[in-house]
Length: 130
Image 1 (tube, rainbow, N blue to C red):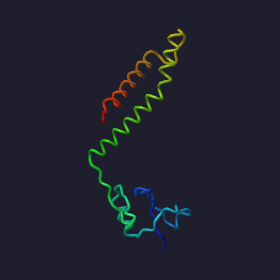
Image 2 (cartoon, rainbow, N blue to C red):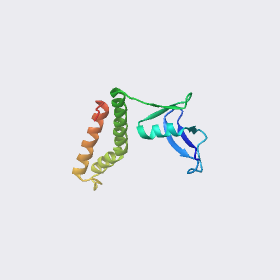
Image 3 (cartoon, rainbow, N blue to C red):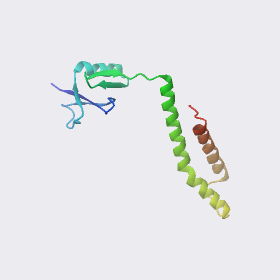
Image 4 (cartoon, helix red, strand yellow):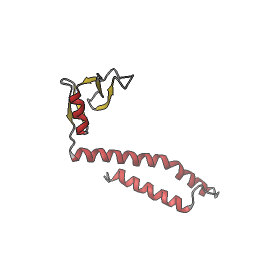
């Protein structure tokens, strides 16, 4: 008979299941769980957390405000990364224009890039949630 293990991070948030008949390597942090708990988790498919005292799973319910804040953090990170990743293109284009040599971007591509960067800045500055 197989033994089912569930692994959770230090906050108790679910990472994955392991079955000793299928998996040869089971993390030392994984806990043995009952078939009932395993089936309950699979049927509900919600974001779960474990109570380490009882080894029972609990739903993590987030408020709309928490979800919005997480989305804003993600949007801000993506916008900041885009700005950082495209800085070199803008600098290179300006240098090439100043030196009056052939540019790597067409004028249209450069204007589109500048517009995309402006939109990214707005997302960061205005905390826009999509």
